[in-house]
Length: 153
Image (cartoon, rainbow, N blue to C red; front, side, top):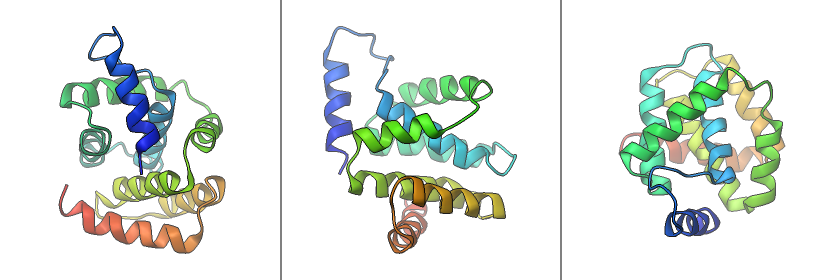
């Protein structure tokens, strides 16, 4: 499902770049949305951040160091960010429908990782479904997969 993302990642890592550097804007956009899911309730929880790191390692084949570096950079830039719609546009342009469903699943995983879904988080996911053109049924199935996967990650 992440064939486009994996190909982009392989292309970047195969070039003469620093091994810890990854500038793929599609994956950066996903990281920003995952952080939005983490921070929307007003609390940037350690459990949620650890879950995001594990996602980066398991889904995008980052090393733990790469995952931490990318997450720290995104966190530092999150104070400057005033909107996420530019990130959504990147995702819409770079990802197919199945990959966008996977993004929704990862966001659900972040939200569910602390065991609580508050009103802000539920509202964010309803908005993300519409913005990423994912149906409510597809989102519900993604949420269920995220619940099941949370136990294994």
